[in-house]
Length: 343
Image 1 (cartoon, one colour):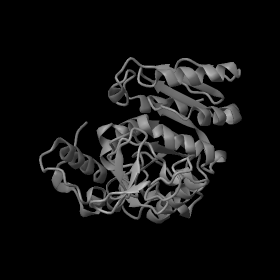
Image 2 (tube, helix red, strand yellow):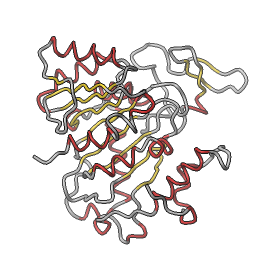
Image 3 (cartoon, rainbow, N blue to C red):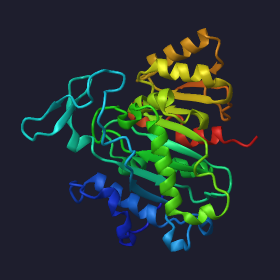
């Protein structure tokens, strides 16, 4: 894709990258610079329905939400132990010990409450739209991941009336913890605040009927994003608004939560899982369990995704490649087109 020159970057986007210690000429920083350029130079087609002027109407922004997954204090999921189970003797900071024994400090990995928002250029707030909430994988910093993994490109290329919301989970850590989404209703609180952010940012949209507070929600996850999605399905408090789940090589566990949700809601919802050899055993197990319960499923992901079905599709790609190059290439774009296909 073509990037806009860097000199156009305004200060208003700096929040997304404040405090970065990356060297000036590192590939990651260059990716971020390109990412910022793109954010600020593509006004929405229907800007008059959102903003007072095209110049003040940007497709993407970052906000800090008190109901974001982190910071967090409480139990470690369904376990009785506290999420933060010790203190670093050198710094005095709390740390969390993952299942493989790695210790991550709260200050470095569990204190970022940034949430990334993005709308495609053709977004129309006065037509039916959906939220696509993205749950990132391990070793991620959300503002750069959505650019590096072509999440924005794929959402834009799908050309559907959606709003992308992407919260930061564990930052730059090999950890799938759900933070506040462990709590009953935690995701509902998060969505309510996110919707208020959108209303405050785009007040013109509310001058006519607009479904910021009632739009359906699709959960989209990659890799380690499976765990917070499972807890949202189990206790997120928004089940009446959930349209379905889209997983890109993201079924590493919590099979019972996914199975229970689909069993109870499959008649008018969808479940789609594209997997590689990395998550194959879990996908085969879940699909077998659903089949034994006579729940409807297909072992392919077609061009049109129907409600009432679970779809399991295998890709020969490597785990780190499947979200971009596939095959199939640009799987998120294809999934969104499949979900929101013309009748």
